[in-house]
Amino acid sequence: MSSPEDTLVLLLAGGVGSRLNVLVKTRAKPAVPFAGLYRIIDFALSNVMNSGMKHVGVLTQYKPLSLMRHLGTGEAWDFTGRSRGVKILPPSTGYKDSDWYRGTADAIRQNMSFVHSHPSDEIVVLSGDHIYQMDLYAMVEFHRERKADITIGMMKVPESQIHQFGAGITDSSGRIVDWEEKPQVVRTNLASMGIYVFNYAYLTKLLAEDRELVDFGKHLVPRAVSRDNVYAYPFEGYWRDVGTIQAYWEANMDLLAEDPPISPEAWGIRPNLESEQLLSDRIPARFAAGSRVRRSMISAGCVIEGEVVNSILSPGVRVGPGCRVRDSIILHDCVIEEGAVVDLAILDKKVRVGRGAVVGRGDTKDTPNIKLPDHLYTGISLVGKEAAIPAGTFVGRNCIVNPWCQQEDFKGTVLQDGETI
Image 1: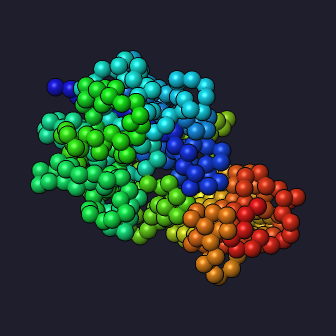
Image 2: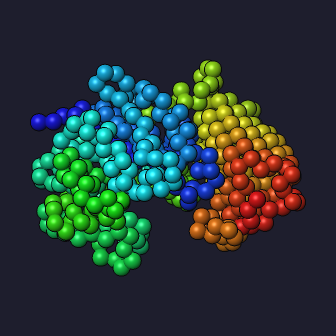
Image 3: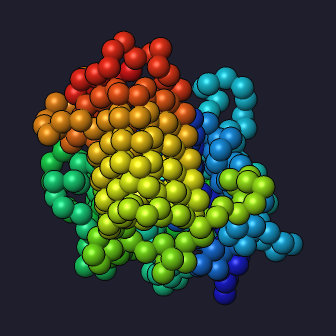
């Protein structure tokens, strides 16, 4: 009988994640910071580690540099040593765009040499861009008990959201008897989490049958459901795809709830603090006399002289005197200068908000972003990496300030609701 150590894990971390807007202009979606100290991929890697699995292939593609730097040797998740390891797997068939991964199944197909070099009865395939805690080996055991060809992690979602997922209809034994990818007509509320267990021989055969089957949810799973044994593994805990700005903001805010459904420490989620490449550890956060902090998460190295309410601050953020930060996510080493206001906004790393500037101005939030109305529509404004908001400038609701924008890029002192610069 195989053990967790024998199970091969393939972690898909190459998606563009374009709906995260400025946060993925400089990095892959799984490398986006989350909850102050972490990156999104830390949750999947820690689940693998805590499940006792020791061989991981990370399939990268889009802007992989920050992700590769973050993974390093895998030491942060105990993936170093003779009998364990994490391997970065970029697209490998050629140099043209057409040689890039065309989908989840194609990504695995391009790396079958790695799969064959790590013989395993079962292969776990999961995404690197979800927030959750799960015992993956319990899912492997469930798969074996039912003698399944494929087992898919699934959970119940509101019927209004089922159109965002792969949806399965099961019989009384949990076997999936019908499948539809992102259905427009509601027939079930059972949604795929993008977590799969495959029999090694079965996956090899399925991928070899037809090279035009490039995606699991759209192609391979429907074919398997129609003729083979595909089971749903029921999951009832917290799970969230943070692939949109709204979902990303809401998941971060979940950390601040009175009884938070997310607990990275209790879940055993490990960050890789070495990837910051600092010469020494950051000092503890400092709170000046007269500062006020309520219902917030403040990381090491922060200096707070103003007011912070219902917000998450990553390491190294400085909030000057007379400043007010509310309902916001502030990433590493941002500087909010004296008298500035940040209200319902997400600031990427090393943003500077000038004296007296306001990001998130106005009480009305119903004007969506003009260029990308499906990205920003609830009042959240975004400021990209290393941008500088000039002193005295007012940025409205649902606005986008792209990375590296400086004073000369602003045409005036007011960026109206829904505008992009």
